[in-house]
Length: 196
Image (cartoon, rainbow, N blue to C red; front, side):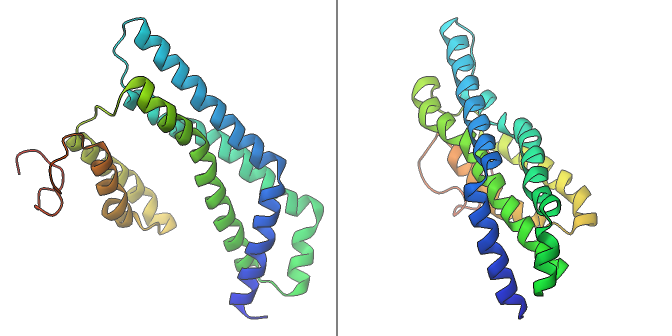
């Protein structure tokens, strides 16, 4: 069996299992519930007079996603081992590398979808109820540098393409958070940093 066909078949089977997985929908529901709860806490604090910007509540999904996704991934991948399905896949002719790669891709997509369970209610209801983002773009660049350093530490072991994060993610976040409008700062060569 060719490697490309093997990966396609494994991904199709994994995404079919993912869609039908109760643990996946529980993880999405938990993150959605946490997002709604954090939004309610932020709105309540603002009505009490405390200055709570949306930025403080928006990125809390990073903390919860580690717990929720570790539980989900262990249940999702562990089901193959406990059911004996992994033995059957190897007996059919799939390589272990293809199995692990398909599981990694499936869990990565599931992770993005689980995080969207938090981000969507926070964005859809948070911006109208709590106002826009208040974080200046230069601060987001500092966060990007911190992310780059953190990924740089793990990148030596896991070969993670952390320059890709700086090249794609950080400029996109800066543009989203730039409330000033008025032109494209990246085209002007300023890259979101005030004063040059």
